[in-house]
Amino acid sequence: MVTIVHKYGGTSVGSVEKIKNVAKKVAAVRAKGNKVVVIVSAMGHTTDELIDLMHQITKEPHPREYDMLVSTGEQVSAALLSLALQEISCPAISLTGGQAGVETEDIYRKGRIKNIKLKRIEQELKEGKVVIVTGFQGIDSKGDIITIGRGGSDTSAVAIAAALKADVCDIYTDVDGVYTTDPRIVTEAKKLKTISYEEMLELASLGAQVLHPRAVECAMVYGIKIHLRSSTKDIEGTYIREGNKMEVKKAVRGVALDKDIAKIGILKVPDKPGSAAKLFKALADAKINVDMIIQSVHSAGSQADMAFTVGKGDAIRALEITKNIAKAQKAEGAVCDTEVEKVSIVGTGMISQPGVAAKMFEALSSKKINIEMISTSEIKISCVVTAGQGKKAVAVLHKKFDLGK
Ligand code: ADP
Ligand code: ASP
Ligand code: MG
Image 1 (cartoon, rainbow, N blue to C red):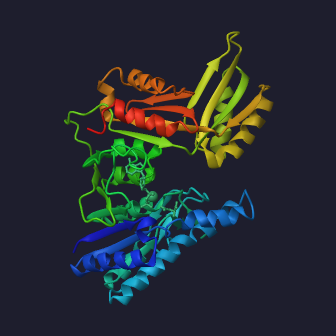
Image 2: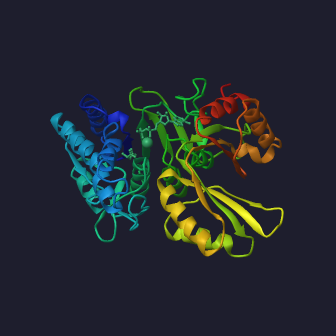
Image 3: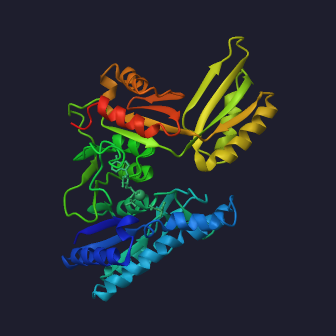
């Protein structure tokens, strides 16, 4: 008997009609004698709507209540899908993350999944039911609901697939695969048949919304092959799997845009050992992820400016912490700029091909796009640009690296 994990994203369960269609597909898979677990996201834009409601009461919600509220979206779709299956005589049960045994770190809003106790899921499967699990959530050591970061249902699905040692992990969404860039931004974007874990992890971490980065990380660690595909068209999508080291690769395989960033600067910090350590330790203690970091030394040599990026959701707290550190270190002050976006090119073939960075900077300059920050690794180059210029930057880079061909 084959164990199959399917995940349906928000658009794919966006209406009762769509949920009924998903139910038909799921029932057909079970009818072939498979054990089926389905992970669902909240219907359509439910999560955003819940966040809007909350913001009408407070701009800085207590993170526990945030999780309590936003996790409910997934409960609605899970229960509706279970009922839709029961209506067509397919035995089914919906479970919350906690009921399904998904245990997370004790960190509200962005806990990582630590463990999955499979007892309940396995029991229900044994009884012949389709098990529907709410994505995006688990429980912590106190039994509180923890959400695992926006877009996190993908990670719930891969983690459950890994725990069950599932034979199939299909992620159904509103595009028919992973493209060279967001097809909503560049119409010439090309669908990729396969993409390596490394490249997908970079693209996802750098803003390609199509898969949650931790889903890719989890798939890579446990060797789960993900098939990302359309929930409406019955065609092959993209396989995310181990890369073939022998392949002759294009230097660049994809371009990503991340609008969810803010830049924090600390000005004229005394240039001595320990300055950076204090700041980044304080940010880490507050569980704030820092991405790009640059430091420029003033000509006098005794002071430095430092800038780094964080997610927009962390900007206020990051600025507060940086201001406190600036004061303690007798720096001039701290500033925050949310009017920035990050554009990145990704490809494992970059390591062996010189001149990729120069080509990227040339392309941006040809459209008069100014680069505010740069960061590189062996397989990616990212540039921070002014808000509003990101889409133009993605289009010019996609063309420059011939990704549409
Ligand atoms: P779901 O609700 O199913 O999880 P998401 O909206 O989170 O779906 O992700 C799918 C969206 O990701 C697509 O509609 C597309 O606009 C966007 N996207 C961004 N980058 C890419 C890419 N490289 N390939 C495909 N889709 C992408
Ligand atoms: N519903 C959650 C969100 O909108 C999780 C997900 O869709 O994966 O972020
Ligand atoms: Mg998603």
